[in-house]
Image 1 (cartoon, one colour):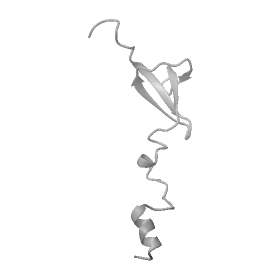
Image 2 (cartoon, rainbow, N blue to C red):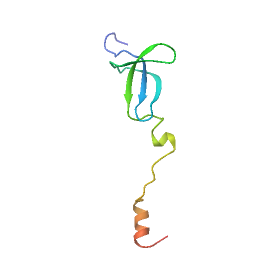
Image 3 (spheres, rainbow, N blue to C red):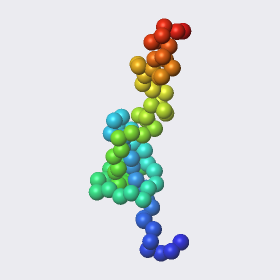
Image 4 (cartoon, helix red, strand yellow):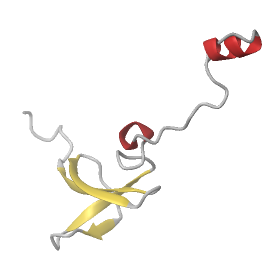
Length: 81
């Protein structure tokens, strides 16, 4: 790798603001906020709105579509089953 052209890769803590779930990972992103992790070290804190802890795909708690898709609306409109 060429020197002085790549961002610094370091460990950071990501905080899911919707569920207060935290995880430690590597990232090139920086932050002015810090947090003390379970291992006693202090890491930069990056707040995210959604993570695997709160995303419907990973949690299996997807919202049901009350209106339905095109086919469901067509069948309902013409009383088909």
